[in-house]
Length: 414
Image (tube, rainbow, N blue to C red; front, top):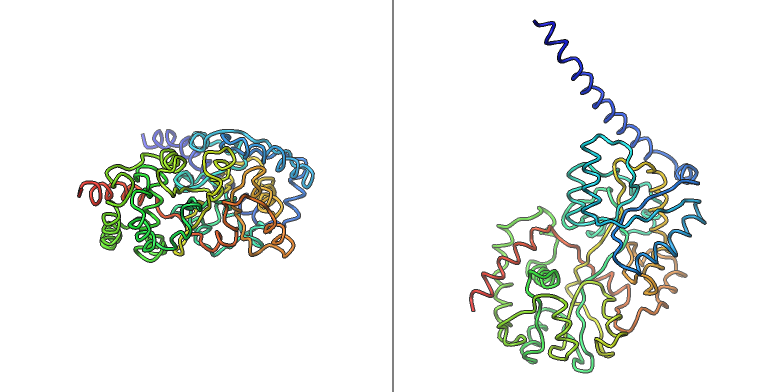
């Protein structure tokens, strides 16, 4: 009987040991890849194909990838880039299915990712790395000590993704009506009271409204560092935000429509601004006003500003899946995407127009001059000003906490 039990278990032991052996072998291979010299990556990547899976809903972004990035990789490294349009949650589901099926060679080499998707990918061991330390352009041009590089929405990056670019939260205002925009939340409060009905923020169920309140939260507790240290800490934030809710209750009677209602979305807020009902709007993407100015939606006198306490930024990243069939090609491609030429082309409003994932202060003097000479539009703040103001996102749970507390502390106290 004992012999039969052992015989019965033997196939499962073999399978288990085989799985452990495969896992160990794959880890060893990955570690070996990361110990190579950079020139060997370029040599091995030549004549290979790299597939990048990314959101494809923006024509400017797609044009940047197809008209600039793809030819550059082909010319410089003889790499053929395959851009596959797919939503990030679908990409992660595909990787999860491959993980469950023990598929050690997939079809994805690079993913465009950030936020909750990165957290899920990291927690489920879907990513290769840490790899950023082997990228020459990461080492030379990225501010590796910056909080927005070290954390992705409060999740430690730990070298599992490389920064590709960022957008920042800025205020837009009509300079024909507002000669001197506020520089702090205190000055904003004064301005709102002196100009009743000309300011409002979206309700925090909207992404932009939530970001406005997160900015006020940062200001209340002295910056995002304390929120990043321990992840979501409801006790800490509850005990240190009485002034935040008092501030919002204090300005409410002076808001648009006496604070009796709030725009449900950024689209609605922008409409109020375009119609002249309010004199300020706001939102992520420091270059967002340019297209509205060009098509006549926003007045030509629209300008942007950030507060002295900073501007919350949203950094997005590039990662390599655990089962990428061409990890060395992916490393070379990502390194090229972090090059000054690629980053500055992406910064130009001809294609994408967003801020760079590298530090402008680390560029050569020649590239700094080229960057300064770029015409992004009169409503867009200079790159160095935006870079100095950049504040990282914190744990996504704070967004839900803000939505709930705002209803209790501001709306239901009316």
